Length: 353
Ligand code: PMP
Image 1 (cartoon, rainbow, N blue to C red):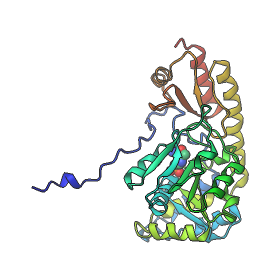
Image 2 (cartoon, protein in one colour; image 1 turned 30 degrees about the vertical axis):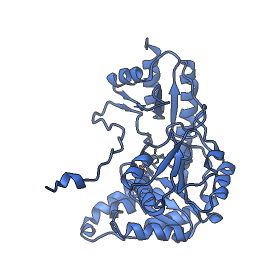
Image 3 (cartoon, rainbow, N blue to C red; image 1 turned 60 degrees about the horizontal axis):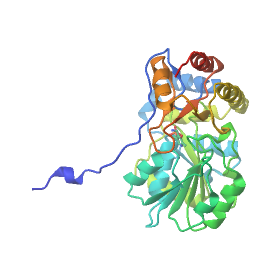
Image 4 (cartoon, rainbow, N blue to C red; image 1 turned 90 degrees about the vertical axis):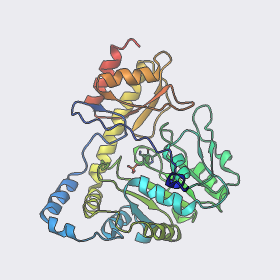
């Protein structure tokens, strides 16, 4: 007897961070921006509310308004940009589009855990390359046969940035593979590889509006690459779902790009709080590398990470704990406002472990 269960696609899904409902939560667990989006976003959404009748029409499948705004912001032609529903969508489409060989896709052992989930979902062979003892990527490990390469810069959850020289060398050694640099957190202090897309036809750089542009709730991500890569991505996307970017998302994203000064000021505020948090947490005895992202990845010689995570949670302070090899005594703490961080320091000042 045939059993439909034999034909179900079995996957182990990605576990997103908790999204607690209460208002009195100090939410330092999913790397959102603690500041609101640029005021232009609210204006654009209010205007859109006045034109709700337009919602009966499908959005522009190419999201040209948003793509052109991105093209202007990054001084690139529009045919070098692809947009999607958060960078998760852009990354998933990229896995589906570019990683179809028999050789393994390479990514670090400690990295964004969604990579392994997409590899599983799309039946892509992969190999996890261990970071060194200091959680740094060794570029030489990527100088070998592979079916593609992906890593975040700065890496997540470590927050450690990679130099453009190292990235360029990985590109130069892998002209036959698509190399994806996931720049979800790049605006907080690492150097973007977007400029390298002028010279490398195998490079795809992926960014998001969820972090530095405070729009995690709208879901916008994008990729930059040469027109051939972007065209291939579009073909796969249009074979899947043409209308992924809603009219409201296109409006909000376009508006967010209008105010460069606000964007820069917000990033600077997060960086200043990060520097202060690093000093404070080191005073409490935490040990960690400097971060180029909007979070710190910390461990403590005495306090066990899992217990501290649970004790913080009891007090409505949410941070991220990963029960995974090599990092199960670490916590990832998103940089919040100064007031939110002060609540964390107050808790730690009275903590006995
Ligand atoms: N890449 C990395 C490294 C991330 O940490 C995240 C956030 N979870 C994403 C991509 C996806 O972010 P989004 O889909 O909100 O753009």
